[in-house]
Structures are given as C-alpha cells and as structure tokens.
Length: 286
Image (tube, rainbow, N blue to C red):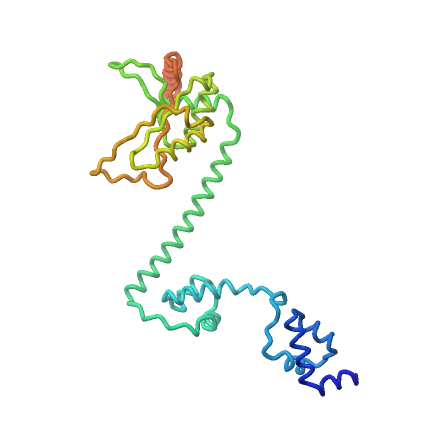
C-alpha cells in the first residue's frame, strides 16, 4: 500500500507513465493493474484527455441509426419524419443532430405530399413482400414435372408462340421466337423430349439496331450452351422514331429465334397433338 501512496505523491511522473501505457494500447484495467492504481478518481485524472485505444471500443448498435439520422437531417427532414423513418425516439434524434443547421420550414402542401409519398412507398413494399410470398408458394406447388407434364406444356407453348402454317402458305417449319429465357429453356427441354437432336437446331438473334448486338448474341449463346460463332446472321430491326420503345436498357437482349431443320414431320405431329388436346378439352366442357 505504501508503494501506491508514493506513486500518488509523484502525480506528474505517474501521469506520464499512465499516458505512455495508454498510447501503447493498454486498457484502463491493464493500466490500473500495472501501476497499482486502485482509486478510479485518480485513474481518471491520470488518463484525462487520452482517448481509449480502438480495440477497447465496443460497437454501438445505434451508430448506424445516428449516421442515418444526420443524413436525413441534412436533407431537410424534421424530427417527426426521421422518427417515423428510423423508429427511434425524438430525444435520441435531438442529441444526434443538434449541431446541424435547422431545415427551412416546408410548405404544408409539400409536407403533405412527402408524407403521402412515404405512405405509398411503405404500401408498395408491403405489396411486394406479399407478391414474393405468393410466387414462392406457387413455385413449391408445381413439384416434380413428369415427362407427360413437359410434353403437354411444350405442345401448348409451341402452338401459342411458334410459327404456324396458313392455308394459303404451307411451309411446315418448326420456328420458335421468344425473348423470355425461361420460355427458351422449357422449349429446348421439350424439343429434346420429343427426339430433336441438338445438331438440328439453328439459332439466331432478332434485335433492334440501337441495342448491344454482340452482348445479346453472347447472352443467348451462353443460355443455350453453344458458341456464338455458330449462330446464323442476326436480324437487325430498324428503329421507328415515331415509336416509343419500352424494351430498352441493359436487360434488353432482343429475341432468340430457334429453327428445327428438316422439321416438316415434327410440325405435322405438333399440329396433330394440339388438335387432340383441343378435342379432349372440348369433351370436358360437355
């Protein structure tokens, strides 16, 4: 104990040692034990002005909230708006942003518009969550697809989206055009199911001239698992300046055209399959 009292008497020397240990990265407890300081008031005086080392700082769960509150305040948000957005108390918000300039008073009409927009954004988020849950549940309902499931689906898909003969133009080509990657995958699986060899498939891209043609070719080639160099010449569609197109941007990759060579017999079978499906469906309506 006498050793500790002597240390307290030489306060300045003790402070120099305490500060040196603090700057070396020691915690308060380590400094206390090293210097035999058992009085918290004296320890506080010895370390006054010296910040704790980073490793001793515990993460504050409210740091992110504080940072976000300051961002919103700088954007002109009121305490009420920040409270609704972050779900924290006004007293906390006041402590976090009191050094920031007060926002200019908003027009009451503008305030009402902002509140309405926030409510609508919340409603959209709730709707989207419900939408995603419904889709996920429906996906699980499909279960495992049998060969017959795929067969019937493919026939209907081709008759809805594929090329069909006209009485005045008999070609009997099996030609399928679509821009949906999922539809393309299902159609290719169906072609394999009905016995179409991969070497009989011919691919080409159909796309607007303003799009990334090479990027679209690479995308479709990767999707169907072939080299883009094997594609037939891309069909470029010219842009009509009077038309406002919505299929633009990075996600626009045009359409993939899939042609089955020597497909006359397959086309006749598809037409027959479809006729049979319609007949069976008609019988169910009686």
